[in-house]
Length: 329
Ligand code: A3P
Image (cartoon, rainbow, N blue to C red; front, side, top):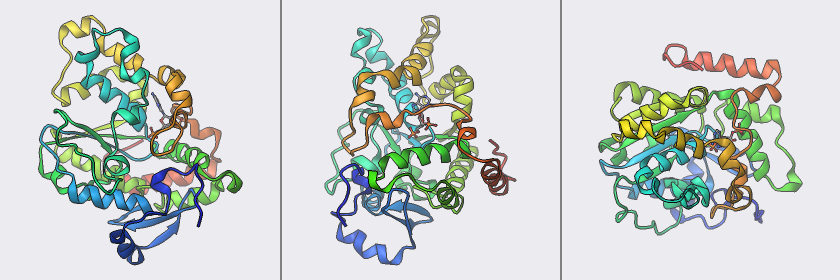
């Protein structure tokens, strides 16, 4: 089937390596949200060409103790936390430069902090990440059980960001509609909700993804930090400090006096990032428009789309899946 040029590369189904072609027939298959297929691999749903990046990353990525991995479910605020992590870890480098030189002012956060499976290991020949200076910063949507073994075996740190399932679903629905070929129109909301609730969404089931990392953060608090989008929105300052302490780069008293934390939060705020020229116009190498990562950036936007019954359905499922975990939204 001819692919629409608007579909990101990781959703296109040509150029699939033999290794994936051999594996695909054995995997349960469903129609995806953008018109291409989703396959159930190691208990989670991925697109045909995403599988290529996942296999390559699982085989070839070698984590180091000093690495930092941002993990999210799609549409839970990855772009925001990529910006925050980049700004936090590089704050000494850019604190004295004129503000307009900060890379976040002229590059989309996804170009500054790459995904392992969608970008670095997406190509057949993985780029050389061995020469990057520590701490190396990467992102992934992989569920905990599917992380490359070296990530779990090393002391590399995991920063996990999740978002309440109703807003995550609504954000995903809007985002995937923009990726669909124009002649196909929007996804049917009810059908998309059915899929999401059955776990059939990119890197879903959503609840298994969140629980995997929530449990890891309880068992290994020095390895995995669990953050919620809603907490960050409500009161970002203490969470940014917590993040800095977790990553062993706490703000000094002098930095606190000079408002370094506030400056990072301002730089990475939705209002700032979404109005930058680069994020209003450019495109990622993978094909998505930069602006598609900035929609409303609010908590509770689901009320504008979901009926009471739809919201109740997600709430009930969330209660069932998380009921004895200690995790609530
Ligand atoms: P909405 O669609 O609800 O607006 P991801 O980055 O994981 O793809 O998630 C995208 C969601 O995060 C979108 O949510 C987007 O608007 C929101 N977002 C992007 N940048 C943000 C920021 N700086 N602050 C808060 N939310 C942000």
